[in-house]
Image: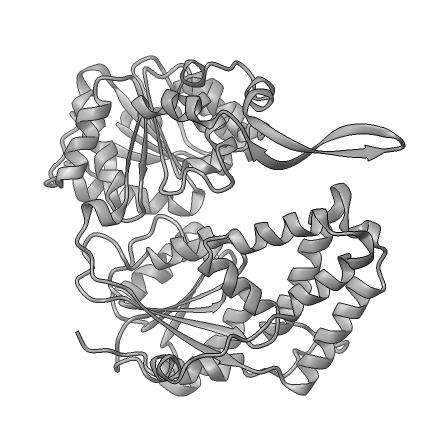
Length: 500
């Protein structure tokens, strides 16, 4: 079936096609909500006389969403689109023009990988949506997709966050397009030229670790990549309403504080300094932060299996109470267990069936069914985890989103905010954030405000800290500090709804 786009493009989408249409490979590094999907379809339409099939790889949770976008923007019908699984039959694949597959499946399922390898051809176009999923040069799915994709005449990568850790993330994405772009046949060659790793002495020998401490000769990398990439930010191409950010804080209950301090003693003071230096440091820090955040999030369990008492849910309920009646509302949280605590509180206040859950406990079809019911207005509240719903979805039905329990990843917070701040949003989106005072939550809050720099600075500081002061620095970091707010700022925090 011919590929025919029916939606009217915006100026920046036309500019993207104009830049990339002359090349067989390219990248759309466009901010979330700026219309990458439509741009990719326009490129496919431009090449349709040389393309029989478009293979669209995306995170598994977004496969149904991609199908919806294709149906929305092109003349394709359901029969023209196929979601590739291990059960897909050869005749189903042959009959479809658009084949949507999960990127994770390529690393986890030999059956899906073999079907891809058997059916892609020189007359194929392969798209890798959310291409940071293949940024790991040693990952199985990266290696498999790169080899299979090399058969396709046209290849495209798309993401709003191409560099989550630095230019090291570019290597695998560009190698999927063509190793000629960067000019290196292996990651080792690229790293030796551009990445600076930390060195350590072990048993008197100096070894190079996997820990990145800097980069060098960045300009040639950018110059090589630039001709193949179209990059644009929201502020450059969209006239979207400004965001409103509001915060709420709460104090730990006596029991929470007791547990929090006990974990600090157990995981810092009672551990050897060696646990927090060298190769195992990242694992030790992750375990420490996760244990403390479960306490502040209210999902730490007592010895009898019950949860400790906390005020986080009550803080959310007071927050939600300020949203105009019947407004569709999203609540983001890092942990599934938090959604299990929030749901009964919402139903007690707003009635049974007022909320639905969108997280990893459901299959893709289950999540999509829950999402559809929320969009239809059958549920007012959507409780979602960042890992399941924070990418690719357009949730413009809502202008209110609450971040109940953030993680350290700035990218997850940014992705969550942009679900309701994208093309088609006509109202000022309001974001409510909740944090626990004098705790690890304060550091998470600072990390998000600094776009991920706070945690990186702390880790670098720890690496340089003397062994005698290292535990003191850890205790200082996880204790958190509560910034003093001015009277005007305190008043601003007390408001959530500002009529526009």
